Length: 452
Image (cartoon, rainbow, N blue to C red):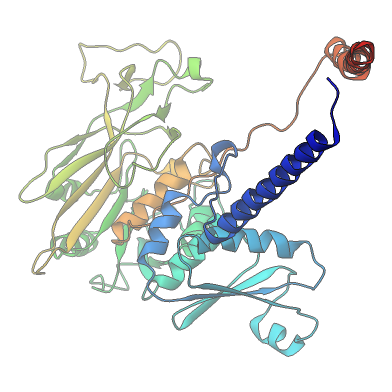
């Protein structure tokens, strides 16, 4: 078909009009994208989106947040800090980020103790705190500490061979104590021989597996503390030597004889049968965020019969393949129904709560009893959800469960392992077959058009 000048002019005008309209549509879309931005996180496990815990904390903060980043001008850390703060600004717009070159203000840097390039100084209300290694976990915990009216003070019983929250031995809880400090919970030892009765300012008392019996006066001080509404974390062990049956009776707890063993432990890669995985969590603010099993070495089972106005919630429960072994933990273990052994599932952890005595309103007294203390020790704290479980317990005890803990985001393996034959096929497709196919199709199109 031959085209005359008039037809060519009309086609040219149509093409021009199309280009103008197309450009107008692109411009409108660009304007809309600036006016109404939409952000979607398509990364694996949503790594660029704040966790639900962080979002919940931001909704509680009613004051503006000021973040000062001490970063040199050309540092690549600036971009990563901006991306991090922007994730928070989506849920709380009154967060202000300000950059300062530490080389230009040495006096201010020295006064704040800034020592690392990229360190942040976060201010909320009248309080501020340094943050050396920015990240969601660290920044949210910093905001949590700053939002608390004051640091919570917990005490742990001392003087009877207990696990120490500042100890470095394998059985101690030093690593857990350092994690508590990160979320604004300060722990100190309490010797009831020197300090009795227990102060009413204590947010919670921790009894971490005493190895020698308490004196009658010490037992009386603990019982008075609980009767008067004190919060308590009690970490038990099989054949507990502390001599606290009166405390167990006060809250309606009975320790079952023996050690919990699990017949399925070897199939899960656990060599010792008394190391039980906890995969069944009760519905409770402490356990709701947990996504991985906890590991409890040599735990004791609990029988719960709450007394008076106490209410109980099961936190941890062993599997149906477990039982309380009353014999030696060697050789072939087998459940014996003719003895005092109990078959699973067995209660290993329980939360008790009631209205606080002599206090009006919604105030609660809270107690958590776990049939094992090893899971928080320096040796086993890093196993499974042990750390997260321990922090959740303390947060709940000090009446601050609004933010429990941010679960780590799993990053998929970025490495793609291919065999040599697969690599050869890929090279053949992209370096030979695809280019030759495109060149051939192009030549055929040109050839048939030329013949018209």
